[in-house]
Image (cartoon, rainbow, N blue to C red; front, side, top):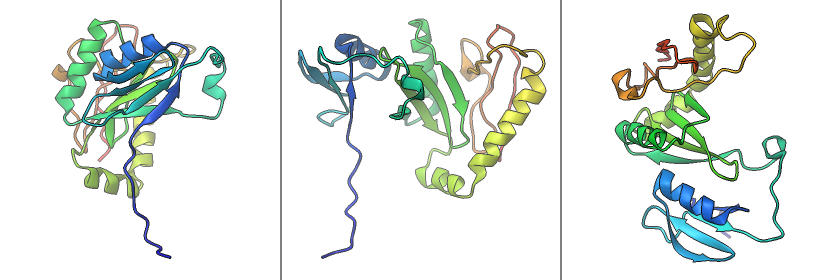
Length: 208
């Protein structure tokens, strides 16, 4: 018996849905997925050379979970772009279609936009700020991630979000209709944030 672990590659995710066609259309619009196969009970979608990356299944016995957010299960699924411009172009394209992120974050390792699909699943679109998985993995292993999160939270609260937003929810987003005009991420200087009431409060968070 061998102790070697042959490591497979994550291939696809399977989602149960009560809105089959809406989900097919949404993933087609957001990440360019197309069905390689579709039938009344589901569809297999892909946006690359794989036979499918997202499997969708439906049944008349399925029902929505109104408490999905507080129940155990998948938190989100993610797609990564090969360069920052593609991420920003997608953000702008989707915004014109009135598809807006419910949250945007600079994680240090990634710049990420989070969207909600028709079934209420969170879908992350991201770019690796280091443009190198080895470098971003090393950054994560050295615990800089936690320091970056704490630094960003302190900076945002101190400089922009308090007390101006006291008593109401705060949304952080990439600033303006053309975010590329404001800033670009790097391993040390990251994404701009602004308050969602229309005021352009520029915040550059230094974490490196």
